[in-house]
Length: 262
Image (cartoon, rainbow, N blue to C red; front, side, top):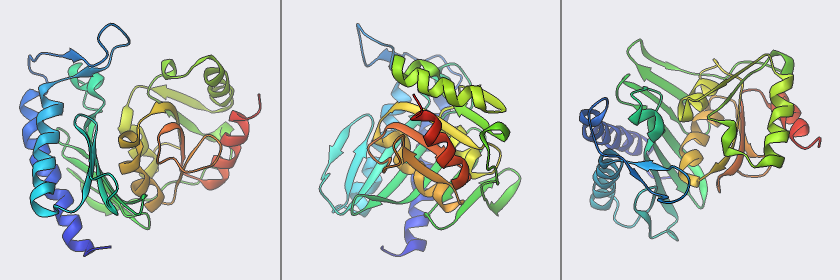
């Protein structure tokens, strides 16, 4: 990997720049488009597009040989060894509803594997950063290392999912088996839920229909804090799709078994 301190500083620069672009649009009147016109509702705003454009411009200027994969403007040099993975506003539905549980996701892969990742919430001024070996939080109450919490059994676990509507009928039945086994289930906080796993506040996130830019930037944060992120069969989650993130490896195995039990 290139100089870690240099890359970490550049993550902060990307976060500062994207946050400055996005914040004027939050809780303000703005037009919302549906990227899936005539089908399901997949909103996008000028804030999403402008923030990604700003980050891409910085990357192109600083690291012109690196690849970029972004939600709004697709891939450039996707076959590069080092690729930036960007989701300017993960949780656009929350964003347009005025709820501060969206975030800007910034990831870096090397050789196709997640290496560094950040979730930046500019409204709450919080950042969660990880390098697959450690993870840190920076926010209004200071800066500190973060770790997942121990939770070996589903019966003790707190589970999050953005919405069960993301599952087809078969996957919904599998998810429901896990939800029925946990202590508490909550919905609707997008990327923030994964950061709460890393921070030891939540034990488990189970989702489906994800894109790579929805999860790749979060993997180094959760793994760096001691957690596990895989697909539903225990393989890599880098392609998105059906994803399980757990704070405790013991819990992860039990969640996978429950998902496969049908």
